[in-house]
Amino acid sequence: MDKILVIQQKMIGDVLVSSLICAHLKNRYPEAKIHYAVHEHTKAVVENHPSIDRLILKPKDQSIVAFAAYLNTLRRERYDLVVDAYGKLESNLMVLFSGSKHRVSYHKWYTQWIYSKTVKRSSVVYSIAGNAIEDRLRLIFEEQEIQEQTLTPQIHVTEQDQKWAQDYLADQDLDRNKPLVMVSVLGSAENKSLPAQQMAQILDHIAQHTQATLLLNYIPNQRPLVDAILAHTQAVTQSRIKPEIYGNNLNQFLALLAECSVLIGNEGGAVNMAKALGRPTFTIFSPWINKRAWNAFVDDQNHCAVHLKDFRPELYASGAGLQAKKNHQRLYQALELDLFSAELSKFYKTHLY
Image 1 (cartoon, helix red, strand yellow):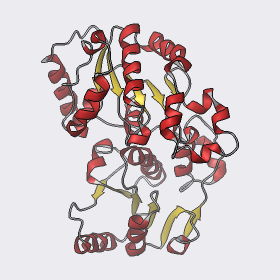
Image 2 (cartoon, one colour; image 1 turned 45 degrees about the vertical axis):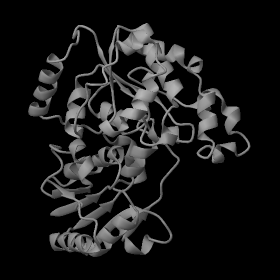
Image 3 (tube, one colour; image 1 turned 90 degrees about the horizontal axis):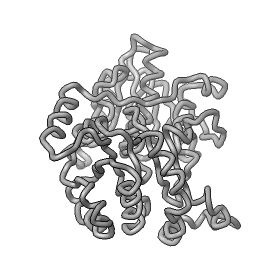
Image 4 (cartoon, helix red, strand yellow; image 1 turned 90 degrees about the vertical axis):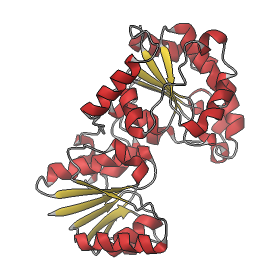
């Protein structure tokens, strides 16, 4: 193999997890050039990755003409192997136009003709890495090889970004003898985010039981949503939260996250980033998300995770779980802090005292 293309579009967490495919392919074919096709807004999590020789970024121009030119660029690369970890229309077209002889993706009856090999996702989990990671490895490994592989994605923060974060924090009014906690106050969507009042209770709990300074994971246009959460917090909590400290881009956020002791909050890309940076995490899952797929590396010590189904399985009985996405607001209300406050306190004692 001289040149290999791995495709993973859209979400930051997915791009990070699928970088494992690049790493394993580089180990198998050390002389091969590994190209990784991702969207522009996700590139920071895989920049400087030692196993990725080139990032192939989708053009910002959304026109059909621009996308056609993009497809022609891929075809000219003459890839020996294309691994499609995304498996939707955009990547279907990329694979189809690549002209590669060897094309691998997940099995779907209506797209299997595009690929030379398809694999089925599995409910079998061999390790604490979880389904999301192990299913990706199935694209390049036989089933009996999965449990033998290294399963941890990694983010490589540059020295320049690291220095920026350290200088930026030094300029703030912070007591650096106290730990920094990054709180993922918002999920990637409304139905993946704790309601404002419940998120405020989490913030109050952290402030009450630790001496930490709290940073928040959000982008500027989400500030009204953040303010709605902070309005429900106690005055002492508000004095410990620094919403004005945040990164202006993903590189800066990663650099700030690397300076934090832990991340606590909604499940999403930020949790995966913290894990890839080696930071302990406490994750609160949306009631409709499959915890088994995305609770990677949960060991109840360095990485902890809670899901409503852990405490109230009866709410998912008799097929009710199939309606969880539709009923997420009602189910979120059932995920009371009292259900997992002891686990949260244990997490503090392990990492913040």
